[in-house]
Length: 203
Image (cartoon, rainbow, N blue to C red; front, side, top):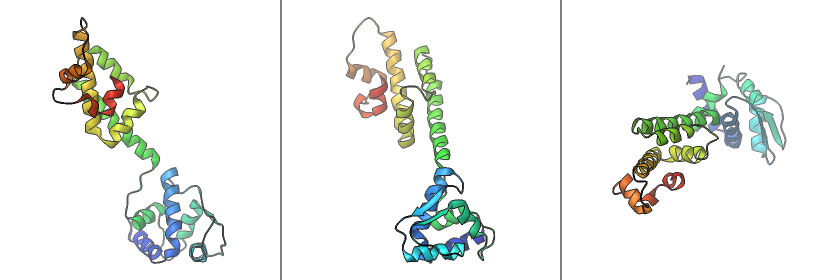
């Protein structure tokens, strides 16, 4: 991050009129992954209108409205020199901006990694076919398990592993009925079947 971006962010922080403007800019950047969209404050205060004038060099009145790309372009005309809106936002909020698309890719990657781990631990053909179907977004369990992996990857991994062990055990004991609690104990001794939402839904 450049010193110019830090200096620009510090200046904006020193002027409270920029607070909601910066919050809206952050939302737009996270949504689009670039300076895009329109910032609009219908109930903008005089202080916020004055803050926008300080960047754009022209008068504003409620509703305060401008394009995100125009705001970044206007920043270049200030005394801080060539700065990117992304760097200014990251410095202002002391955070790393990750777009919705980047977050989605991270979740997908985490879930794929869990599936790969389970595939390495089973040689049951039924389980292998089932796990491969879970890699497809249109599969019934994909969204549920992907959300679970994002919140608690280890819990999701254990649930999938127990599901595979249960399927394997059932295929080897097809001649008799079995209680759910017994199946749970066989698949994962010492673990209650009610403890994992993924397990309850996929068995």
